[in-house]
Amino acid sequence: MRAPFFQAVIVPTILGTAIAWYRSGIFYWQYFLLTTLAVIFINAGTNLANDYFDHQSTSDDINRDATPFSGGSRVIQENLISPGKMYRSSLIFFALAAVIGLYLAFTRGLLLLIIGIIGVLIGYFYTASPIKLGYRGWGEFVAGLGCGPLVVLGAYYVQAQTLSLEALFISIPVGLLIAAVLYINEFPDYACDKKAGKNTLIVKMGRKRARKGFYSLLLIAYLFIILAAILKIVPCTLLISLLTFPLAWKAMKIAHSSYASKQEILPAMSGTIIIHLSVGLLLSVGYVLAKVFPWL
Image 1: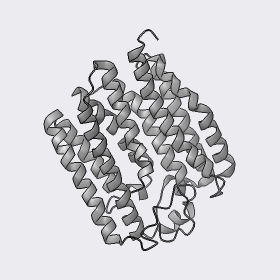
Image 2 (image 1 turned 135 degrees about the vertical axis):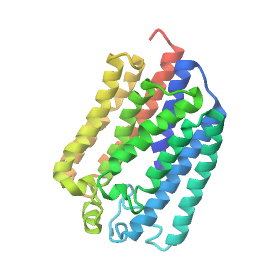
Image 3 (image 1 turned 45 degrees about the horizontal axis):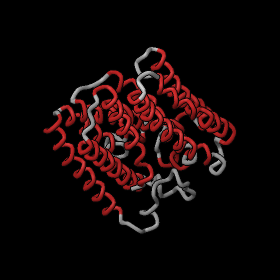
Image 4 (image 1 turned 30 degrees about the vertical axis):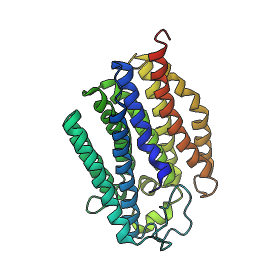
């Protein structure tokens, strides 16, 4: 299930909940836990489905030099789990998410049903035929949408039972950063993805040109945070997240010089995961600080 990557949905769930608490003083812990479980189940279903369909396309099978962050979980390739069991497990997790989603939709608002359906469809058709979003260069966009605005707004709505432009705006940096995680993780898989017909943005642009896309994702994420504070869309305490920028600068430098090396680019891959986690959590901390210390 690649559980460490559940941070992709846990972080925006925390952020959406923190925004709702800051603006309304509302926090329903039971709905928060159910929301967190639902998005984890969708993420687990997505990861398992991706392993299955990447096996079907041979993308993971021909990758003989996977990294801890790319190339799939390898359990199918190592004959630890059968492809059929992997696929059925993914459907079970999507079904569990659907059960929780239906409960939340009927107790907190039917808009959650639409958000949940979009989330499941994005997760399943990320690699599933006939859409195969990740194979057509749309992977980063839909991952950013699903793990950014979709989850943040959903978590906010569960608490406040309304939508928020503020939540939408500040969800964009989180979405850009998870897109950056996916983007940089595709560099080591360039040759295998190209051979399997998995036309990610890295395959389409080539690794050297694709470096600029990585820089852009990181820089725009930080610019959004700064712009939101300047326009007073969010409390200025959210600028605490800028403390992580040296990590982003380091990741960009590594990607610039080591884009063609599977081993040397690993620190940029792990660093981007840490950036996403720390920025998302610090944005939430910023809301807590603004609520507890309103004079800041």
